[in-house]
Amino acid sequence: MDIQCESCQKNFIADEMPRRGAVCFSCHVKTVRLGFTYGKVDFHGPTVRERQRKQVADAAIHGINAEPVTNWM
Ligand SMILES: [Zn+2]
Image (cartoon, rainbow, N blue to C red; front, side, top):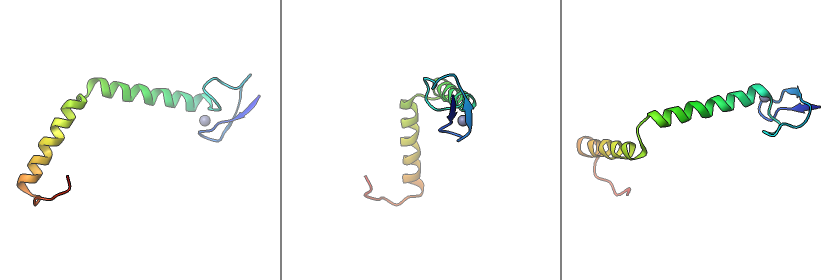
């Protein structure tokens, strides 16, 4: 069966429509690797709470040092 990849528009041959959909193997592998990379970054990176704390701290620094007081909240 000749299937056109939804992602790269290349045609590829498969016995049947893959369960992942009309996506060729190389695009499928790319997606999997991307998910794995992001998962790893998330796992080792700062937690959401830590990121929020840093954002608040950065905002405070900018508010005190540079930005005039605004009513954007
Ligand atoms: Zn593809």
